[in-house]
Image (cartoon, rainbow, N blue to C red; front, side, top):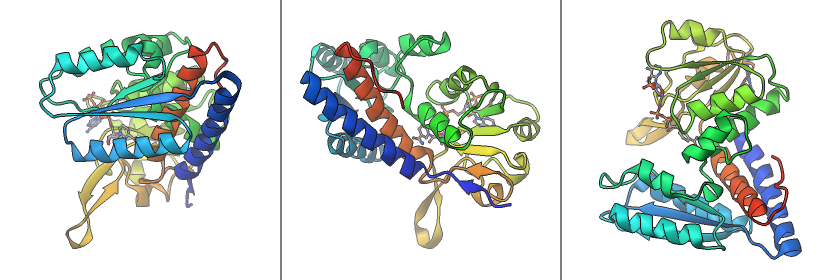
Length: 294
Ligand code: NAP
């Protein structure tokens, strides 16, 4: 069997198109242009690429983009002062502070300082708590992307056995919460899980977010299962170059799975698309409007 390859690039493009249309409507009907402020501290190369992509896609969707690049030796007090200004700025509906931050800054304190109504990364404890108790919240972008991709294969996830491999606050836990809301039966596995391969083999839906290149082998996958690979790992490639691989051994897995996301081109593009959708949602709510559903 060769799996259906789930096209994250195409779905992300569709979502960005809908965001652009809804943003234009909000601007036309209510005079509001959703605005996203991206804050980058220091020179981390991967973060620079990521923020550049976010800024470009924000502008392409017709949203206002505000970029704040701060020196690597910025103090926590200085960063918190910027966040206070962004919290108070009515043109800014979404604030994202690119992680990781330099060692002198406590990321938890920074996330806690963001107005939960502008927390488009969905990392603030208020939004995490709302998600956990099933209230409407700004939901982390990558987990949203995972569930939207899974629903292209299974529009109704109710009753499916889902295994989420990884329990981080930014991916594993929120993916699990979203799947519970979809009435899947959810198992969360992590580094202390016993018989990990057996646990994974029970999954109708397997979401891998471990950050270990190609750890999930073909033999870990139930025949016909849907596999969502969140991992982005750079490994040595041919001719001294590097290449990206996921947390799943794609070539083996696609012979067993029913459907699978590729790396790159699967979950990755969905993250920014969902960030734009969250910014639109934050702007709509700030204007007292019903936000569109994605
Ligand atoms: P993380 O914070 O490092 O968490 C990794 C999780 O995997 C932890 O819960 C850890 O368990 C578990 N784990 C690690 N090694 C394991 C092992 N050998 N067996 C079983 N479980 C193991 O990583 P993350 O931030 O969630 O990211 C996960 C992956 O997704 C990374 O490759 C990252 O680059 C990628 N990512 C992609 C996007 C995107 O846009 N596509 C966004 C975010 C992250 P413990 O809790 O027990 O330590």
